[in-house]
Amino acid sequence: MKRFATVLAAAGLVLAAQCLAPVRAHADTLADVKARGTLKCGVNQGLAGFSAPDDKGQWSGFDVDLCKAVAAAIFDDASKVTYVPLSAEARFPALAKGDVDLLSRNSTWTLQREAELKLLFPAVSYFDGQGFMVPAARNLTSALELTGSKVCTQAGTTSAANARDYFAQNNMTLELIELPGVDELVKAYGDGTCGVLTTDVSQLYALRLKLANPADHIVLPDVISKEPLGPVVRQGDDAWFNVVKWSLFALVNAEELGISTETLEQAKASQKPAVKRFVGTDGHFGTQLGLTDDWAVRIVKAVGNYGEVFERNVGSGSKLAIPRGVNQIWSAGGILYAPPIR
Amino acid sequence: MRTSLLSRAGGGALAVAVLALTGALLSSAGAQTRPPADLRNTVMQIDEKPGYVPSDGESQLDPAFRKQPVYFRTTEPPGTIIIHTDERFLYLVQGDNRAIRYGIGVGRDGFQWSGLEHVTRKAEWPDWTPPPEMIARQPYLPRFMAGGPGNPMGSAALYLGKTVYRIHGTNMPDTIGLAVSSGCFRLVNADVTDLYNRVPVGTKVIIRQAPTL
Image (cartoon, rainbow over all chains, first blue to last red; front, side):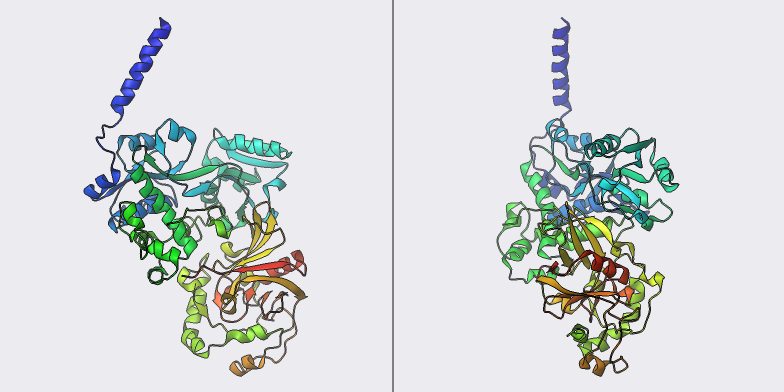
């Protein structure tokens, strides 16, 4: 009986889930966006460097620029974005319900989010991962030199477990100090209670800004966990998936080809085959995506190439000053690799 | 031979055109972590200042250009030097996907070639003998200057192959991160000494340029 009830309950849940799912006669997000005249982009409510509104309500940041890039590809106007600030809990339901066309909100690409939540990550926009911050004066070059250190981390996160694993695997001794919040972390590291701070690299750079003298601290190049961040779309609309994916690839390809806001005019007149395909003077690649053939030019004109987006928002042009690290083109020491436009 | 690279300053017209700007550009560059792109791509005529000894404060680079370990994935073996001229960085490959990164100043000459060289000679506190063309342009320059803190060659030099190119120090630390019209790849003295102590003669040096359109 109990089992039967469970089955019934499960069937009810499935029905409920189906009822909750949006009734979409067609899944043509690109057509919807064009008809509406604006892209609805889900973003973080406020995360330095990635997504934040200024006092006039203008949004900027790394994730915001991806919204702008997609809008530019469609409308040739990066301002045609309606930003929908979403909490961590609200973000995936909002996308699933169709409240936004695209989620660009520092979300980690995981199996569960694709298989269970029925979403898709078109590509990785930012490779984050757990790292270590130490005083520069210690002259360390590798996390492998951290044996015996007092390491501070935030309690209740995966960071503590990752640090334990990493130290154990490398035969290093660890004294882990778990603290409840970010402010306690900064305080403990700042007053020397712990000699090392560990959390995701992007957050380490944000925390560094809160220290008395940020330049006296470095983030070691070692990354011990995978946190690939990227945009997210609903399943069932391959054409839209492609538009978002190739908008991101266009940013990366632009940098690899040497196309930037500065060199864009020069690129339009280029005779190099790969550049001609990119700017649309050869082939009809934009048309194939349901866009115009100058789609990639529009993107670069609006936000620049990947390197420009990175440096302006989180890199050397920002307070965060995060080095490119893995988020560098594959041919220049990083792992960013965009398939070719051809 | 030893100093001929410094003679490549050339471009008198350019010198006149940009000299007026130089002061303003330099002072603003000092306050930034990295020069803006338009400035980075501008080749500036900055005259050498022989005898000028920089203060410790001046030699303290902006954080982005300070020597630091970074992630760097490459198929080149540890010990290789890779110079990315457009980034204004010199990487010393360490293996295990990392490198030590140094901030550099790049000469206009540095933009004219890319490829492979080897360190053929090393010298500490090299002497400086400005070549005739440089003397003609800047008659106040000394005919010979013994190595030392005021020497534009700085605390060490690594000579690249049979070329006139080299990696050297500087007595003008505020030119790190810029493209200046004379000199090749310059580091602050602390950094070039550090590099000097890490690499032997025979070290492979790869110079990379930004892609052309």
